Amino acid sequence: MRIDVVTLFPAIFDGYLTQSLLHKAIVRGLVDIQRHDLRNWAENVPHRKVDDRPFGGGPGMLIQVEPTVSCVREVESEILSEGDQPPVRKILLTPQGKRFDQRLAEDIATSERIMLLCGRYEGFDQRVHDILEPEEISVGDFVLNGGEVAAMTIIDAVVRLIPGVLGDENSHQDDSFSRGNRLLEFPQYTRPREFEGHFVPEVLLSGDHAAIAAWRAEQTQIRTKARRSDLLDEPK
Ligand code: SAM
Image (cartoon, rainbow, N blue to C red; front, side, top):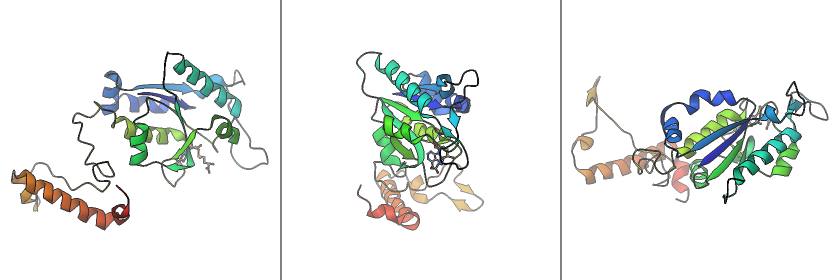
C-alpha cells in the first residue's frame, strides 16, 4: 500500500514512522508512506504562506485552495505516472466527516493507494472539498488542532490490517469491533498466574481448547452487553 500524507507539519510524523510495527512494515516494503509539505506549493514565496483570513470575518485562518489543489494534483499525477496504477483514494480529515471505525479501516485497507489531507487552523477553504471531492473522515466528535493525529490514527488502524504486517494473520480477527464478531474482545491474562490475590481463570490454564473458546465467546457477550450493548444489535 502507498500512503501519501499532505500536511503543514510533516515532522509530526517523524517518531511515529520510525517505531514498532509501522516501522517494520515500512522496512519490509509492505507500506510506503510519503509526506508532502503543503508549504512547498505556496505561491507566497519566500514566506511560504498557505493560509488566509476567512471572507465574512471570524476568528482563525483557513488553508487556501490554490496550494492545496496544486499539491494534490501534482502528487496524484506523480503516483499515477508510475505506470498502470489503481486510482488514489483521497481522504480529507475533518470533524465534519464520516465517523472512522473498524469497518471503514477494513475497507480502506483494501485500497492500494490512499492520500490523507491534514487540515490545520479552521480547516480548508470549502473549494478544496468542492473541487477535489475527497472522502471526508472524522476520528470522533471532538476537535483536534490538526489532521495529523487523525491521519496517524487511520494509518495505524489500516496498516495493521495489511496482510503480513502482524505476525499472526488471524490475530486481528478477535480484536474488538473486528470482522470476527464485531463485538468487544474477551479479557486476556499472562504470567503470573496470581497477583495480589487476583487469579487467572482456571479454564485458561486447562489446556482444553474447546472450553477456552466457549469461555471466551461467553466473556465477549458479557463484556459487550455491559459496555457496548449497541453492538449486539448491529448487523455483523
Ligand atoms: N473549524 C473546523 C470545524 O469546526 O469543523 C475545525 C478545524 S480543526 C481546529 C483543524 C483541523 O484538524 C481540521 O481541518 C481537520 O483536518 C483536523 N481535525 C480536527 N478534529 C478532527 C476530527 N475529529 N477528525 C478528523 N480531523 C480532525
